[in-house]
Length: 413
Image 1 (cartoon, rainbow, N blue to C red):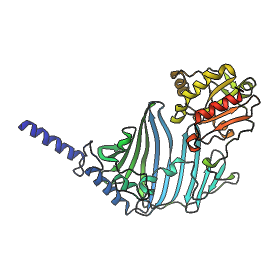
Image 2 (cartoon, rainbow, N blue to C red):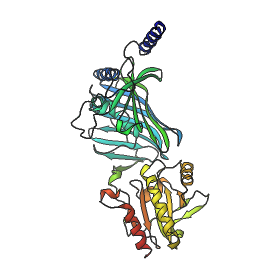
Image 3 (cartoon, rainbow, N blue to C red):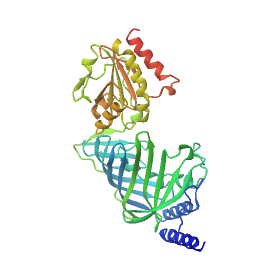
Image 4 (cartoon, rainbow, N blue to C red):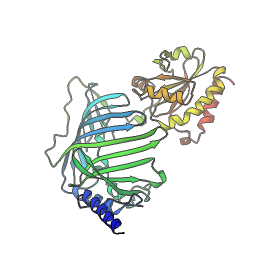
């Protein structure tokens, strides 16, 4: 008994010492918000009060079973701040990013007047009002801890009237202490019990200063585990900020911001843009050669798109049923440049027998792809006879029945 007590005391002292003698880790079985997590959150809120400006260097990475390690962007973000959650002001940013095969170098500002950003690799400037969204992911890098007025209350499980869908069943606990770029940080783990371990968020706050240094989101799906990390490499507070403007070179073209979700898709009756693309067999497919003898169904998808993968078994069923009657199915990898090998492996693993071609960002623009999955079918003249890029549930339509009906009509069955 004496030995057990000594071991217990040693473990307790070790735990308290590892927490800097300040905040003890929570029980992993905590329901609601643990006492340790609550103290860290309160410390983080208090640390916000003297902040008037933020200057940071930021990295964003993803590590996954499917893709391995990816460095998606890095850059600088500077912002005005009012000392409380939700008081994020004017922002200046610059970043280089490579996301889904799109390489960009963007320098811009987001102010009370709206967005203005230079796309340095394309020699253009994009301007928009306050509802515009920057193409630079870094602009939203630390929105939650600084720009979301409800962030800390949600971690404390305080009901928020402005968020009617917010569940008060979130479990939040102080999980560990980790070193982040030379700083000891408290790690706050949060997840919703109804989702189990499918989505787990972790927030990292400095042991010494209470400041936010990292956020990671772990997702666990049929494709394995993926961890996305937003990391504050370096930061300074209350430093002089740059002028919230960017000078536009004379040779830059000017574009007004267009919300991708409001883009007008291709319509039934329009001619489908022709293309020649490499396929998974090391050869090429050309659309105009395919539709001279077949009705062609193009299924635009990406390896990261869950709904795309959920649709594929039905597409395979349709192909098996109608391929001998004049239906050609082509799976078009879209918005996923650099993941061709993973796409081919997925198709082979699931024993799908339709063709797989590898698209590029230019084709996605030509086909005005707004959402994934997108299904487009053309007749033997290349005219679009079917188009859907939003869930049938939005229209009260059974997608599977609708698509099969369109195929039968096209094949005159």
